[in-house]
Length: 248
Image (cartoon, rainbow, N blue to C red; front, top):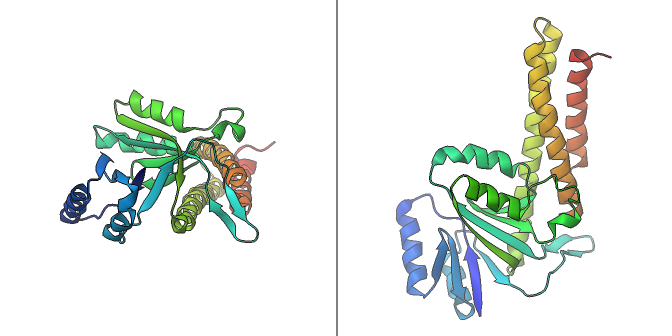
């Protein structure tokens, strides 16, 4: 049986080549940077080689699996995922990709490898967010190479908690960034003077916040992650600035 492994590559180029050579020697097939196709019988040896690189073992399944939750313990299976891996020809594309990913409720497996919920549309009926297909089309549109693998599940459940924590850190980080920006705008608005730059910056933060709220709501429905506290705090910060620069 064919499985997949994805891992966080070492920052040292020398270490990366050593890992690649060892995986090749075991008959593994590289699909994309640190994403490899492996034989099930070699799983233990592969995990041993990659034990310091946060390896994740994946398998394709026929049926669509729902996320599984344990009472009082949160999620232990993420359900069926669509893997999108990509490479772009120029580094300056990175900022554009970063901005698109802010509209994408997904799981970062490693740099340039993301997992999307297989049944994205049930939580995004208005198609306002970025799913696997939209993201893949975007990468193609900027002349990048992209590979898509649907109906994939994660086999080593010990990695799930880490991935969820990284989602929380990313969403909370975006929320705090908007909050901090609005706090600075509030101080500038109180100081008086030309409010036009403040209004322009506030408009950008409003758009960022609206997207953040939609993404956070998707994660709540999909993975039962609760961002209500930070979203509410950021919303109040946005409204506080708005009450000064756009008085009714």
